[in-house]
Image (cartoon, rainbow, N blue to C red; front, side, top):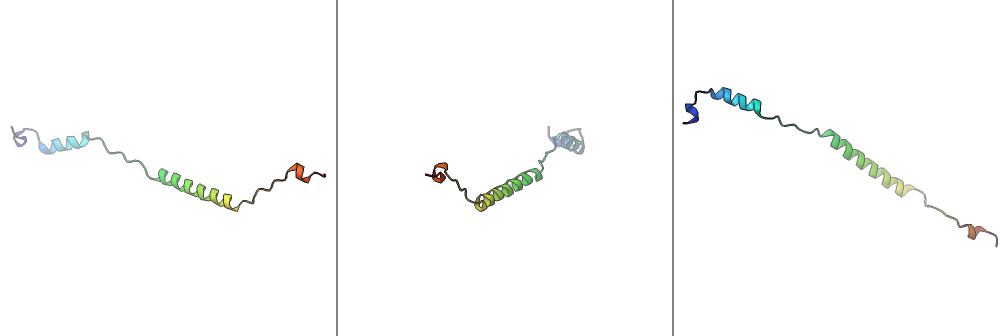
Length: 67
């Protein structure tokens, strides 16, 4: 028996199949973009602070003691 010989309405069958299909859920893109932007800005700020920070100067107590 061919599909065209069916007593069912082909338009109704297609509509039913369309209703039974699960809708494709798309994840939103903006949270990933916000996280990537925050990570990039944080890494650039960290690099700038590391480059612009004054050098550490340590003095040993024994070197400044009278002696």
